Amino acid sequence: MLDRRSVLLGMSGGLLAACTTTGRPRLSDYEASSAPFYPVDVRPERIKEILVGLRPGRDGGFRLEAEPFGDKIIVHNYGHEGDGVTLSWGCGTLAAEKVLETGEDDIAVIGAGAQGLTTALILARHGKKVTVYAEKFHPNVTSSIAGAIILTASSYGDVDLDTVARVNALAHTGFDAYENRPGTGVTRVRHHYLNRRRQDMARPDEKTLLGCPFGDMTRPTMIDMSLYLPYLMQEARVAGVAFYTETFRTPADLIALGQPVIVNCTGLGAGALFDDEAVHPVWGQLVRLHPQPEIDYSYVAPGNDGQLYMFPRQTSIVLGGTRRRDVWPLEPDPAETARLLLQHGKLAARARQILPLQVAA
Ligand SMILES: Cc1cc2nc3c(=O)[nH]c(=O)nc-3n(C[C@H](O)[C@H](O)[C@H](O)COP(=O)(O)OP(=O)(O)OC[C@H]3O[C@@H](n4cnc5c(N)ncnc54)[C@H](O)[C@@H]3O)c2cc1C
Image (cartoon, rainbow, N blue to C red; front, side, top):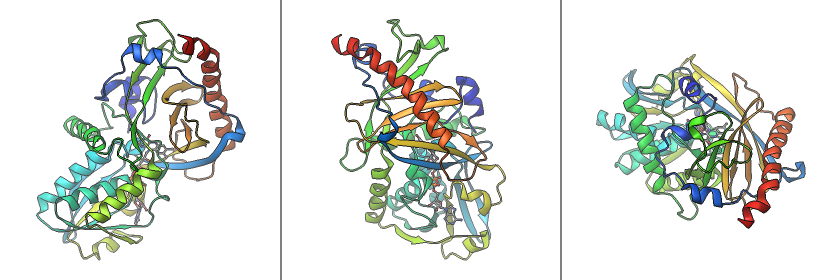
């Protein structure tokens, strides 16, 4: 997944499509240049927590299809790597459409991450009787760890472009309904895509963005998953969805369920459960710092040994940018913590240097 896009953008990662298809309004250059970059305080004593998560990668891109399964139908919806939150309303809607085509009313959804909860909620809103079964729930799912910024991409592995266009469009409209609603954790942020090489992103005013000569500016949706996932689960409950803790070891365990239609939203778990060898983990580490209310912007920037991103939240400042394919252990890597603090620190130093000029301007 993401290879073609990575080539297109000259970088790797699930966050870097900002400049391709966001469908979001761009900030005016005036607005962006006149808003100051307050420096992020990256001193080690500011660390609140360090988190590690495994993105559910899949060679060829996410799997969204229905197939016969014993005497049942299974609808697969997994393998979204670093875009599973972004794609939750798009893929959830398309998975729900496949369920609706079966004409069945009693539906099992396996998985309680962003994909499972969204798919369940959409089906319940269509009047279906929905039961979610999952081994883990928030805050112990990958979706709880996500950044999470909503930046869609121009391609997702081999997924056909009509599907990509639909999931991208639905991604934005799905979250618009939550924006700025109290308790959802869904807001917009002034986001900067910093780049050292892309001439097509030249700044008209010839100013640099934190030392990078090129850059793009948008105002995408930013999600605080610590608020959003519980909100979504509560919404699903209110819509009538029932929840059970259950681990499925083999497909036979699923066949034993009473429901005639099963939606598979097991993320990385789908690899072992369905013997899908294309599924693999993409290890990521985040450093969460104590909040700084004055930080009202986010960025994705090039760094040594991978990209860097910074997202501001009410409850923390999220520093990230780690991607390691096929790495499983969930322990944080102290060297990666040091890299994130050092490299984000360089951008913060740049902000500190130019801040007096910006505030005076
Ligand atoms: C550091 C990091 C940063 C990220 N940032 C972003 C971002 O900015 N934007 C973005 O869109 N995405 C981001 N992601 C990716 C995103 O988190 C994932 O793509 C998304 O969470 C996948 O959602 P999911 O519902 O498919 O899987 P999960 O959240 O992993 O949920 C899977 C569910 O299936 C259940 N399950 C699995 N196997 C079984 C089984 N055998 N039996 C029963 N239940 C099972 C689990 O218990 C869980 O409930 C990030 C990920 C990481 C690690």
